[in-house]
Image 1: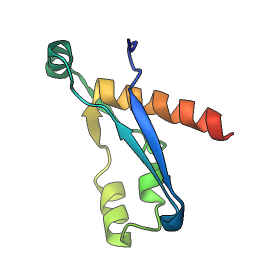
Image 2: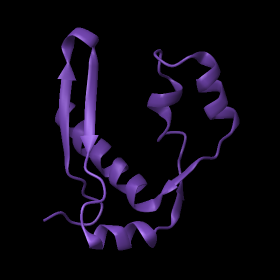
Image 3: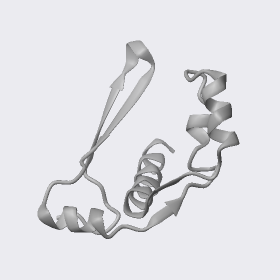
Length: 94
């Protein structure tokens, strides 16, 4: 069983594309639906968006639009879970 802010996920490395894909399980149970419906918004920090705004894959215009329209918001539980997942995966890679 997952605890609060703990997401079920998998990681796939596509060496030929120099890409890491992280898949995260979404809403699965009726309880998840209630959690989704009772969410609070959470503001992203610039640190949260670092990988996006510094990506060389996205067009410059897209990155500039993300920065110019800051702040951005997300589902509080998902933002917290993503931050926790980032820390877990970052610990694995050093």
